[in-house]
Image (cartoon, rainbow, N blue to C red; front, top):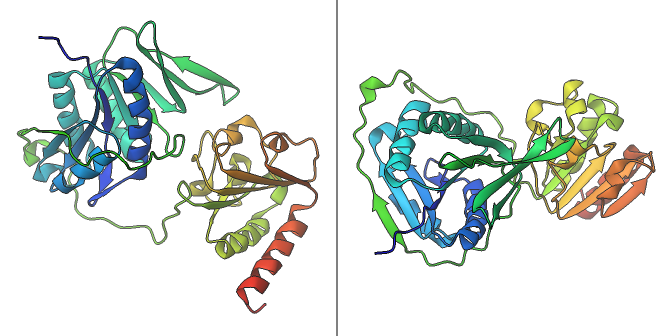
Length: 335
């Protein structure tokens, strides 16, 4: 009997019965990797009472799903999730394991890689296969975003990486909702884990920057907090979110959760407004895959114009105010 080739795994991140969109993004790129490796794409789904999500994982390309349900896994905690994933990996020995580079995924991946004694490439922005050596090529920004480094893990398995949300597109949901389901029963005891969940305090407002269809972003050229108040008004009129560069966040003009770029979030909106943004590589890696980029800057030599679909040389404030006024007229909003 021919032995099946080691599989490509994707960790399916879910919260309260809802799969995070980044999981579908990873299934999309994972499917492309399996073509070069001639193997199966598998989802790893763990939690409690989450079996109803399995068909959704199949519909985005997974051929097999490893499912573990247990009351201890109702909410994410590092130790029980790590132990569960490590158990599965040691038993089934995947070749590649992709995990979302979310706060949960980053926390989980380090513990899993350490336990499995394998390598881990963080915040990957590009994935491909060396067809001759059958190795995963994991590319990420390095040296402050000034170069792109391609990393391999030739001697240890699985080849692991965390992948930033919005780097890859969500694939079309067109695959069958059925596939091979492997349900594993794992003995977990609540008393052996030191961290207990005693409650949950939600944020007053969750900024959905990564999945916003419109992002209105500002940089150093905005000049201060007052400028971001104006960008916020424009974003509200466009049903979008406000983004910012690292320099604007470091200056205290806006909070970190709005930061776009290598050390912030990656976005992929339909429209990205870049006001007063010079366009350094550290920022571009977080927004260059936007469908349409509109840049406004006084400096006609600003790097942002190299990737902009529409570039306007001028005062960002004049353009922003004019756009706000026009939108208010169309929406018939009183001044």
